[in-house]
Length: 327
Image (tube, rainbow, N blue to C red; front, side, top):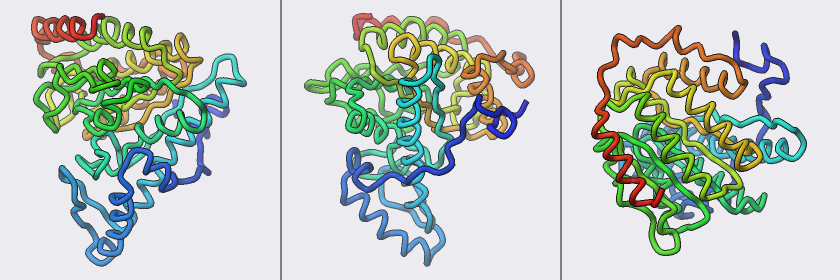
């Protein structure tokens, strides 16, 4: 069944006419010198077609990258507005999902990184605090790579809890288990590197033993999700073993978590995903979870390609992070 407003009517509301983020919105997370420098670089991109923009990783730009990046961040802001409004007016308000490019969680305050230009989730978090008075924001990042940009933006902030699960040793090499925040923000960053081969069983355990108790203790006003689908077993850039069913589970459980803790105020943001088939099936199954419909993961997932998860190493990592964070 088509998962669009055209086929599903009021079950799925598509935001088409939203404003791009302002420079002030971007500057709530990123240095103004970076923002203005990127805008100026668009002239060079117009002449050369594609350019490497300065930063800490391989990130390229074309002549439209600046405007597209403002639009991506603006989509997240518009969804925060919509979700907050719906939480006041509807008994069972919908979640939001920003299907955007460029992604954002690697972009550091001073520049781009790892295909990311502006930190869409971080910008939305600051906007929610500023525009809606939603002081406490809980960010879940289940991309296979560590969301170092979001991590850095809030590393000393006690009001924004950043929780990242990612493959141990993967790009960009940050997100060690003992990186827990700094100063007033100590304890409000949780990084859980998972060993290669971790899959559905590992992530189900992480959700119930780590994510849920963290969120319950933090008592968020809003949940934002960096939804990367590159931990899928078919994705070429890493070696975790998530399945389409894993992503259905995450979407359904995060939806319930938001309902229990913050009036269903929750927005997902598309991050990584480099196998278009597994990406599309997994995003579609996330939508089914939001709608309360059965998963269709069995139509796509092939259990025969999975191998035994490193359960002992996974348990060790989970027990260590629970000890560090007193869970």
